Length: 123
Image (cartoon, rainbow, N blue to C red):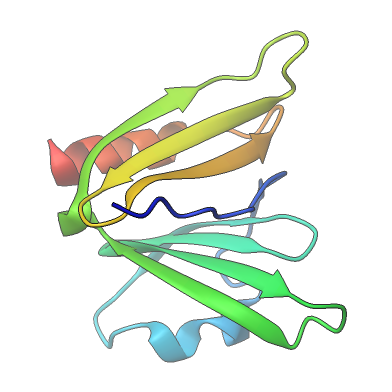
């Protein structure tokens, strides 16, 4: 089983319409964006159906990788909160077919909404 390397770190919450032009072509007609996070170049979007991770690559940022993780493929998740010396919170998703996928959020970013939605969708 191949494990994905997201390389998406230092995420912080942004308005759900921030950068929507980057991924709205992926959204279904009845799909709603629930929460959006952004790092310097990368993004993590959570909709009512899936996660969309956008990994911007290259010097110019024209190359982008779009990772789609439907809730139906997530078998379990864990969260590690930020500490005194470890300044970021981590979200780990275990997905059928690819293994573990990790995302890191800057200290102070509230990810309780993600955990609540995940609990509702996969438990």
